[in-house]
Length: 256
Image (tube, rainbow, N blue to C red; front, top):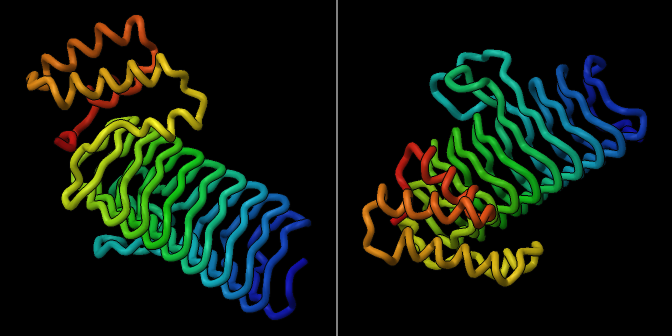
């Protein structure tokens, strides 16, 4: 299953059914799970672990050194779950000692061509990053986030679950769950109602989320007052709990 023209370190650990294309390079500390397919001309380096059923296309680079001037070659890591797709020229860097020392990616994510995941990012599941979408260091993306083409997220910024980042969007502050962000810099546009509908949220839940969005962004309430109102609503509307928890724990301030 390994093309003879590939360069695979004898110290790398590959499941028996992993396939590796020609001219791919796999480094010493790499671990790759069952049924994963690595295309030609890919590079996987560092302390990198890929789970099962991942697909890595040609010219992708996973687990190489972070693009951080403070990095001094420490043995940091990249951890990837299952069933992810890394398309052409996608780059994912491992972590640094200035955070947890690890970049983490969940499962069932799609990284389109030329996407970049910087050091120490923490990504959930079922995320889509469209072509050339970029994450700065220490970014957190919740489950089901969609990033449009050429969009970017500033370092240390968080994007909540089910949020939608429009194409060419520049995110410099935290984006709450369910919110659609547009512009440079990003501002809230609406809730991601179509995405929520596709993921099984019913009409009542979407209506509650829309009303919560209006409380936060359209009511002219101070953030503290809006948060108290949303906390009350979340007691009877559990779909708002993620919304409220995100607002309370945001450290970079919310898009406004």
